[in-house]
Image 1 (tube, helix red, strand yellow):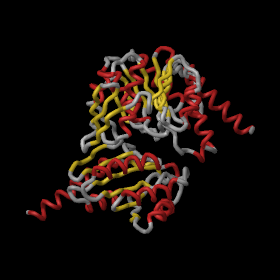
Image 2: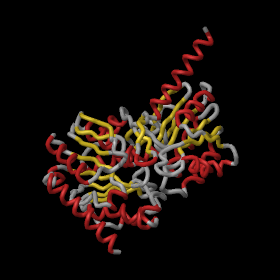
Image 3: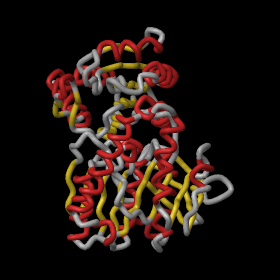
Image 4: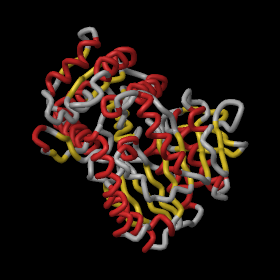
Length: 408
C-alpha cells in the first residue's frame, strides 16, 4: 500500500510540475479527449480532419502522429499518450500557434499515471471497451474505472457509444451536454462496404469514406457528432472524411494483390479486420499475425490463433515486440490454437516476404500487430527501426523484378 501511495505522489507531482512549467496551457485551448479500447487513433484523426475542414486551427496527439496545424511528425515514443512534460509542451506549442482545438488520445495507462491531470477537457469521447491491459490494471473493472476518470474530469460535453455493454457506466456521469450514439438513437445508416471503402448516412447526410471496415462508420459517427457538438455541420464532416487517410489503420499498401497493414492488437479488433476482408475476398486470405507483445496480456495469444484459424486460408505467425520474453515461446503460444495450420517464421521480414510470394493477384495479404509503428522493441530496452508498410512494398517490388526477369 505504501509503495502504491508513493507512486501516486510521484505521478501527481510530475503532472503538476509539467503543467506548472508550461503555464497550464489547456486553459487557453479547447481539448477533446478520446478514450476506449479500439478506434481511438482513427476517431481522433477523423475529428482533426473535420475541424480542419471547418477552418479551425487544430493540434493532434495520437499513437501514430503528432500534428500542429500544417506541421506533422511521427509519434516515435512507443507510447500512445505522451508523458506529462511532453504532453504539456505539446499543448503549449498548440497555444503558441493559436490553435483552437487540441485532440488527444487518452489511455488507461496514461490515466493510471495521472497524465490527464491539470488538463482542462472540454469534450470526452468514449469509443468502446474490451479486454486489454488487464495484467497492468489488475482487473477489467479497474481498467474501466481508469477510462471513467476522463469523463468524471470532463464537465462540459460527453459523446458516448451507447451500443457498448459498458456504456451505462459512462452515461450516468453528469455533464452539461450528453450525446449518446447507437441503435434507436443516432446511427450510421445504410452502410455499404466496397473494395474502396464504406458508404453510409448520418441523419440523411451521405458519407463516403476511402477506408475499409464497417467499424470505421462508427468511428466516423463518433467524430462527426463530436464536431456537431462544437457547431460543425454534418455536411462539413462528410466533405472532410471523403479525403481522410489514417496511417497503419486498414492501410492499403497494394491493390494487386490487396495488401493491408493494420495495428489490430486486441482480439476484437483483429476479428473486425479479418471479417471485413473475408467478406470482400475473391481468392485466398493470407494473414501475417503479429504474436502479441512480450510481458503483457498473455491471455490474448491463443485467442489470436483461434481467430486466425476461423478466417485465414494461410496463417503466418511471426515476431512483434517481444521485449525481454523469448519470441519463439510467444509465437508457439499463438500457434498452439491454430491446429497445426499456423506457419511459424521468427523473422518478421521473412514472414512478410513469404506471404507476398504466396499471394496471387486476387488474394488478400493482411499484416497485423504493428500498423504504422516505427520500432520493434526487443530485449534489454533495445529498439530496431521498423515499418511493416515499407517492408511490404519492398518485398512486392522484389517479386515484380524477379517476375520481369523470368519473363524476359
